[in-house]
Image 1 (cartoon, one colour):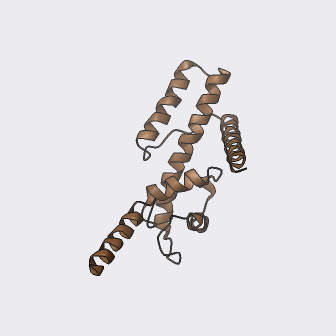
Image 2 (cartoon, one colour):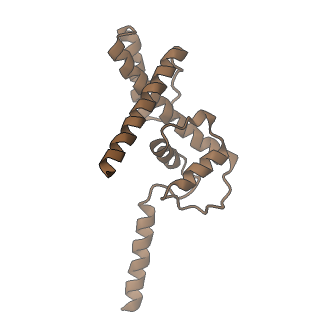
Amino acid sequence: MLLQKSASAVVGRRLSLFSRAFASWKDYELVAKRLDREYPAEDPRTVNSYRIKTLALELEDFLDDPKAVLKEKDAAGIVGHWKHMYDARLHAAAYSEMAEDKESCQGESSSWEHDRISVEKDPTKKVADMADASTLRRAREADRAMQKDRAHRFESARN
């Protein structure tokens, strides 16, 4: 009876481990999704492998050995997935801003919307760069404003 209880406890523990977000550096897409969700202000184009490891180890559900070496190949895979998610978020922010400001023609807007949708369906697709630096700047500002608003609402809910 005791052996049966301990065996079921081990199985239960293993199931709970597998239900967590990610288990190693090899889970590129899962690591990138968690980093994108938890650190939306980080730009993956400027993040090196040391910073990726630091950010990932701050997440409570990372199960890999903290002393495990993050190989350059794994870091590149994580950054690749994270960059696609980040670009999709910037495109979405820029698209909604374009729609509000009526800055571009309908054809360009629908093209950006198509890019955004195709990246959401398949993050491995490469999306064309945005038209100009001012649009990118406004998209980043809109993204920062959304994050500040989210943090403010979170703080308000805690108090």
